[in-house]
Length: 129
Image (tube, rainbow, N blue to C red; front, side, top):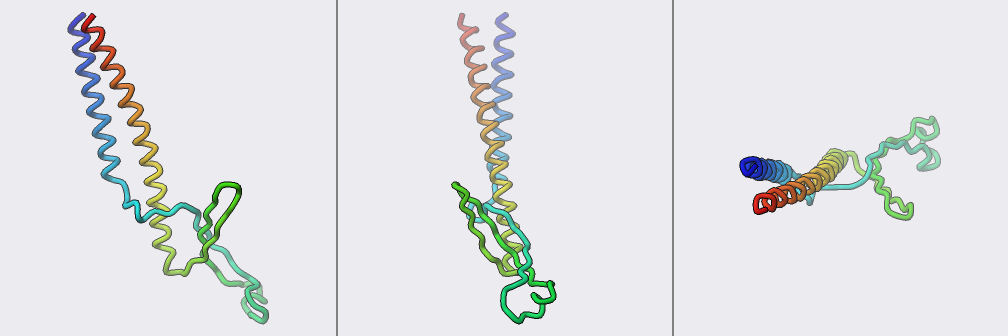
């Protein structure tokens, strides 16, 4: 019986090490937090920006990029973007999604670490009984 307890502690320590390594790898792959942006990038067409515009009058309109950010209580902010800003905004939005997913994964791994610690503690207490 004592051998099985030692094996489970060893297995728990190995599992804890693997989880910690996964967590560290996720941490090291995080994007720079200064280059994140929450929101949605939309392409809109404005068809009535000024009287006498032939493009608007024909229905063709003018394409426009807009960053839309939603806040609590239904408040939304829209920011018009220049075409040259769009690639950077896309990258920042992508970084935000990656950071958000990585944070969730790290939280899950931390829960696994807590369970592994609890299991190792139980195994140690059984060994002392």
